[in-house]
Image 1 (tube, rainbow, N blue to C red):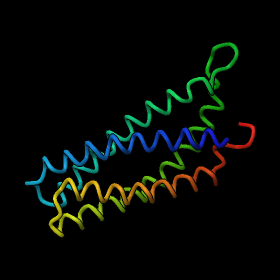
Image 2: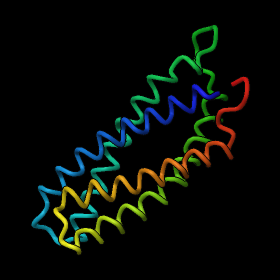
Image 3: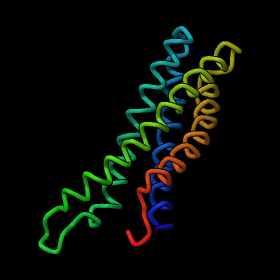
Image 4: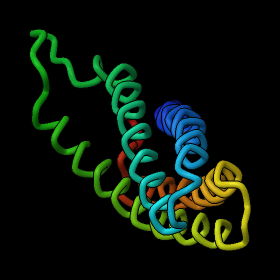
Length: 147
């Protein structure tokens, strides 16, 4: 069970590292845009990168977990776990998006460099996201004893 939490958190942190880097570059490239546009475009890029990397890593780590001895996929278990994961991610993503957008916009209005505003806002949001996600996963009992 603890190993499953570790893999989930590892995948999330790797995905965030990729999205923080790309988002900072995009924020700086869009520095001539209005603050609200820079923030919005950067947040969209953040999501595209994050979910692409996270999905690939999550699949790679869990592809054998849902295999039956016959070689087929255990669709029932996969759907059950995906519902719990999507619910947990969804709750955390709502919190993350609100905090990320507000903090990046705020730092841009304080005339921070766009890359710095992006990195700082994403750092703050990521810490809060990790707390909310791990609490949600625990409450949803995604990883039960013996699973």
